[in-house]
Image 1 (spheres, one colour):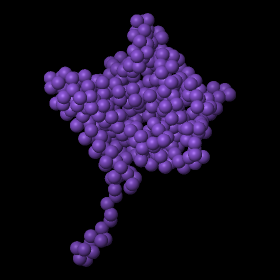
Image 2 (image 1 turned 180 degrees about the horizontal axis):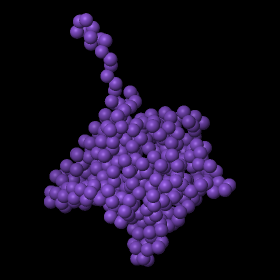
Image 3 (image 1 turned 135 degrees about the vertical axis):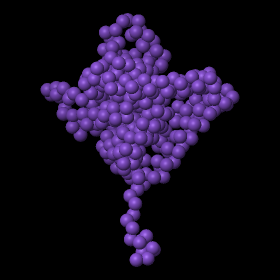
Image 4 (image 1 turned 180 degrees about the vertical axis):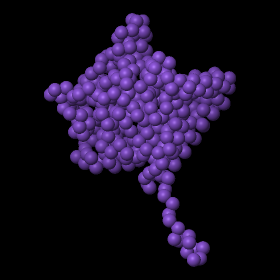
Length: 358
């Protein structure tokens, strides 16, 4: 057999991408993310004042994309090889500032959200505030009144301290100490290069957290459960309550689109806002979600804002602001009504980020 015959007969090498049409979208998006992260950090260190503002916003944008790519890697929707998804997921967690938790822990928590059709946490932040000293509660409420994401900061902080106060998490101590040492060294280097750069990084991270929780807060009217054991089963469904089945999942999930007029703006959140489509088919990659959403709800094509499961972000801005304090201590997420003001009684949720493995 000639060399040319052997080449023709050789089996075609399988693509590394899980979906054949994902090569270009993922290559371009990941390339943009990494370039934006590095370029924005460079602007923060070396640029003039105006450039530092651009650098802060650009870094926040890159962090937001890294968080949503972490979510994609958790679903193994990018690469065929689970190990490749895990490696890239770990990298994204570093860029998003959430590397204190293991990628597999982040993935386990998020998979429970899909399988159990509930919000499951191991740190009851509301009980922590209700049962704690009054000064702590007042401080958190004051921060939240000013739209400083104190609840999310507490959740991220608990990821760091949990291995030292919960015996079952002792094996995470070494990782937390290593990540903490590396990040503190990086922050010290950044402050030495430019104190403004460290300030810009902090603001960028807080912007990322704020954007993520603004999206997370209004995607579900699920029940929330605080379980000390992350593997413990949920309590049974209350008598008379609907079962946590597929119908319940879709009825209690909302596609909080960034924009219905300019759909391309949803790319700013890596199409995460097409949330009903994501829950209908969790393995569907980000670049296919708009098409899946359109297939699920063809009746919404003429009036997307009037569709029951479509809740554009502009519709709940007033509710987000109005309930910013009651949302801190209340367990009930509220209800979605009908009409243009249907989100007014939708209080939303805090502390359900997929960046915290608790």
